[in-house]
Length: 207
Image (cartoon, rainbow, N blue to C red):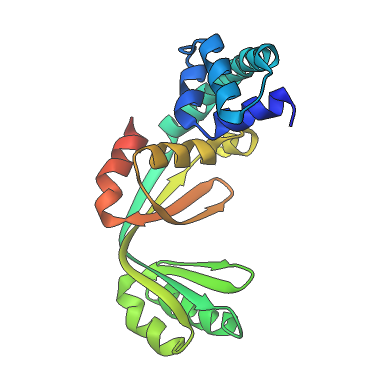
């Protein structure tokens, strides 16, 4: 692995170093020596140059973050509590999932369906737990109740603004918020969290 890739790999694996680099708070020589020692290489000069180049690229990212923060400030946030997430064995379950969707929609409930390679995930209201257990008997792999779904509604600039979702999830991860499920649809970004994390999430999204 060349010095540039080695440096990028080390910085990606150490988010605190990346953050300090982005803010211009790092001694490049000290960082280059640390990378050489950690990776057991003798390429100090090349890695030092790679660190400086990384910082130059990070200045462009900071400009991008300003666009992301502008989008976040204008986004609408909707919160739905008492949410259920059911993960199902996918085999022959899609038709049943659509029947459940029809029932939930008739009663003006919440319903989202995520189709993976081997499983289906249903996000709906906790009150439908019994219906899920009955309709998908023997095919429920996992079910979690009393979660919270947060929906962020952006304007159309999100289509041409890279890094919005990663910025949101990085902020959540830094506050030790575990995202149980995530979905998106055009300008909407939706994610499901534990109920106890809601205050932290609202503080993050409101800051």
